[in-house]
Image (cartoon, rainbow over all chains, first blue to last red; front, side, top):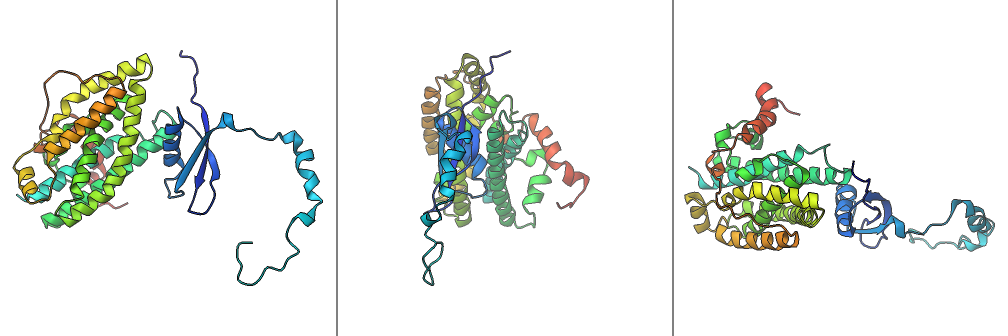
Length: 96
Length: 249
């Protein structure tokens, strides 16, 4: 039996069209970055979902810890004044 | 005999048979990502076959459509090269077969973009985009398997040794090719071979693989003389239309 060696995991980000940002769409395994881009093309853009692909090795992503959620995110809940909801949006302005 | 019809059949059958071979991997790929990649390539090839055989039927003018040409001819009427009907073998064998074919198909479509036949030129434009990606994909696998582990190198070198004898036939030239070349419809296979050799040398050298020096080369596919494998492919490919004539799905 061969030693269990698995290819590294990659996170995939796709830009769906010009002007929009890359969005995380999922992950996959690949031997290296070049193959990860190709695999992402085949797995995540076969129905014309994108015009640009980013991949990043999952190991390189540093994340916040779920148990810190209280201290990280709850303090913002009581500060509604941070939302620009006190303005009237002029007619004809979309996507605000 | 209608030369353009015959030429379109050759191009179409290469795509059809290789597309079928690739489809045999569906659900059996070494990893999910690669399974999808191979199925995509298969669908590209079958799409090319659809366009080429549809046009062949129109050129022939006997009312045969792409389905009739794909599913209801006899084996001797198929004009694909022997390379594309060779069995899948292991994953490395499949990638090597694909690479040797893609390295020929890319410069061929590049040349056919300038065909004096507008319809053929349009099919070449569409197919070229797909083929460029196929070549990138297959070449990278050949490089990674060749310049990989001891085991992968050994196996992919064996695949190259097995398949090399079917590569000369890619450049098979007869009166049909010559006639269409004179009319500016087809491509100069001498030039395609130079481009092919350049790609093959570059990728195989990066893959640390050796081109075998045995000189014997098979041919016959372009004349309808096939290896035993085609019969099995056709049995599977044609079963539905033979068993339920005119069936649509």
